[in-house]
Length: 360
Ligand code: TRP
Image (cartoon, helix red, strand yellow):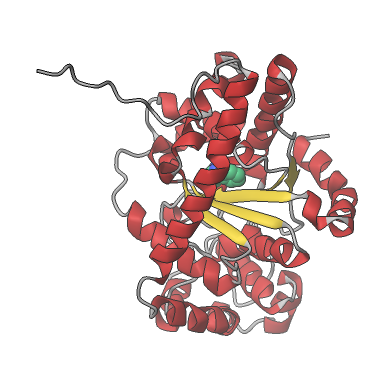
């Protein structure tokens, strides 16, 4: 049984434990601010975060800015991407009073956890990570040391707040598995500090983009949550289809048509097969009209709320400042505990004594 199937089979029991006692859980998840958030993010994870938040699970969302430079040479537009993501979180229903939204780079103690954690894993283990392998291949570059070790950094993202629930897609399961290994090895070696977090996977299949491949900004097949209705229509109309007027759901043979059907189905709560039957032999331009209508209707409320938040000056900065402050307080406390357990807590809780200059 592969690990995704195994994790899926554990979901009903986990869901029951969450519902029985939501305050026993702390959820951490996040994403790399590499571009605008799109429908794939929404159906894959954002909707799930809002659901957990509403159940009363304390939630943390990291905008993983240091993870942006694993496969590119520049952090240009990271700041804009972070701000746009916060607007989408708010519009989707994440409530900053119940969800801590923060960025890696503003939380030094989180990053420092990387050092002891790196000592707990071997190079061979890191090289076996299938997600790292495929991301490196896709990047077309040499394997940077950050690319090789970012799953360990991701363990620090999760463990700094003792997160024990991590909603992720299939791609990130190896990282949660590594996080469990790191927590276990730390606890065995130095005494118990960390929980072994559970991955939470949803039933939603990986969201196809408009061309049937995974929805991703870099493939140009994504519908950003922040697009206008006109931009949405233009993007959907660019999808490659074919001349067969009979619409069928055939992800292998007709990926563009399948992507459109899946997107429209998710937005209307229907199934791709039912939509294909409904369109029958009216052809792909009717399918495109239907998809445009479905997506724009689905996103109308989100977009209206988003513009209201965007119109409030300083709002996003306030939320990030508060989130980073809170993340720092928690990370500082965890790092103190880690150093205590490692026997490295010297005079670290006292005010620093500055050397005095000799007089004269
Ligand atoms: N690697 C995740 C992605 O690209 C983003 C991420 C960073 C993350 N830190 C995390 C996800 C911690 C879950 C938990 O999608």
